[in-house]
Amino acid sequence: MKVREDGGIAIRQSWLNDFLQCPEKARRTMLEPELRIGSDLTVVGTALHAVIEQVLNRTLEPEAAPVMAEPALRRAADEELWKRTSLSDDEMIDQVRRMSAAWVTDVYPKMPSTGKVEWGFETHIGEIDGTDVWFHGTVDYVGGDGTVWDHKSSSRKYQQWEKQRWAVQPSVYALAAYKAGLASDTPVPFFYDVMLRDGTTQIVQLRRDIGHFDFVITQALQVAEFALNYGVDRPWPLNDQSALCGPKWCPFWDTCKGRHMSEPELTWKP
Ligand code: SF4
Image (cartoon, helix red, strand yellow):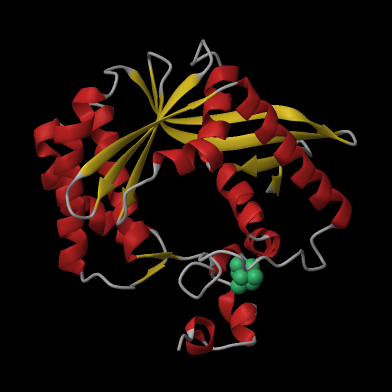
């Protein structure tokens, strides 16, 4: 969440996700963005996105996508702050190469041939006590047929039912495309094209209807109201009730729950 130049509040779907996982994580992400650094896995994802973007923008022939894996990976590694967790440089390059090839073979032929690549949006969703609230974001691809696409790299398969039921990103992106007139009808079809680390792919189809739009707007406005009224100087509620509260996924672990217990204590079992 950030304050716009016109005094309004801008909310990104990733920040709303953080808030829903743990409000204090969302607050600290605003105040200490420099602690939120990526990993070798996020660098692989950034490089894969860069290769896909070039193909969709027609600046790279699909057959040449795997060849671009190494330069894309080196650029991504230079441009973002990240820490190594499990992959060597060669393994990172190999993953980008393999996932790029899999995307070209399995996903690209199924995507609409025309569309908007890396479409940025600012969608007004309402106001709280006179302060306008907006969703801001960038969609990987909005097809000319009104479908919305997001590319993912993952070590695990996505569960369609989980994403259809709970995922925030499809609701926000489909709402933005619908309000901008890029998706003319509801429900808006949304696709996660998922490149798995073993070289296989998944196209996970979801859809978002008026009810999803109403709910995510209500959710975001309530969060904005909480932030505006409570302020960011005092800690927000802590929620540790998911695997995302741990040293691997929360950048604030060391100064939050990790202050109270070590990792062996966290994961102890008889
Ligand atoms: S360590 Fe857990 S409780 Fe603390 S901010 Fe992170 S997710 Fe929230």
